[in-house]
Image 1: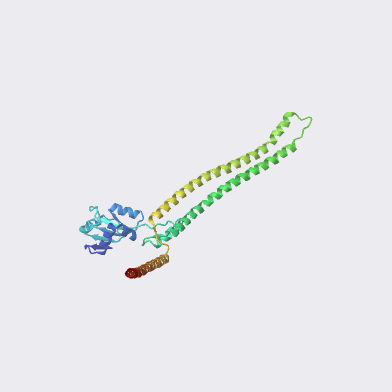
Image 2 (image 1 turned 135 degrees about the vertical axis):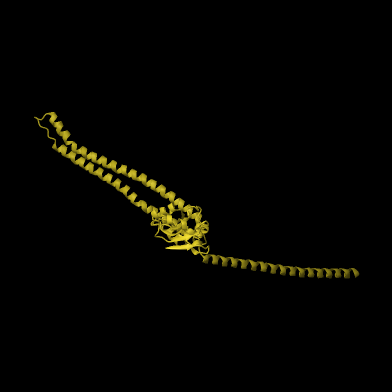
Length: 313
């Protein structure tokens, strides 16, 4: 199917131009632009899904891929999109869908996928919950290693006791089989002792070899567990740093914000009431001082009048 594009107002041309100029739009649409015949063929061989192909008319004969949506575009329009004008071709290619199962970071993935088109915000409680969930999952993956280490130590001890039991029973059998006769020479007697000690020595070898096997393998697995623990700690610390940088810490809830606002208003009302009462008391005090001043002035006048009367008498 071949379509012709000759105008800037074409929806396909605007779509391709927006893909080449805005990275956020490419991420949202999960598509990108590829220039050149060899690059497009490489995408096809790598199992990328090619959505649209835009090519000049004189380059159409060089196109080997014929089973796709092909758009003939003018040179004036294609120069606004691609950098290698000599190629005369570009394509819109879809991202590959990831098939990775999100197991370890399932709490973070669930939160981010819900708000992938919004600004993700985390409270302190939600952040601690996510980190706690990731930490518990990391510890769960190490439980099998710890169990195997303990099992190997137990098997080493079991082999040791089994070898010691064989040694004790073999030594008892050798002692019971020893019989000294008058006609038997010393060489035959010592030959019997040496042959009888073969079984106890085998039991001792079983005991020591099982102990060494259990301790050696537990030490190796313990070292591997230590490396896994350090790797988990580095991952956990980097994850905590990333969440601290990217997350936006908000107030726990709007209800608490409203309650805090109401408390602040109540406190402000009490302060203003106290201030008004203080101003009223100041006015009353000034009025009383004025009255007292008047009384004192009248008393002074009366005293002066009495003095004048006495002097006149």
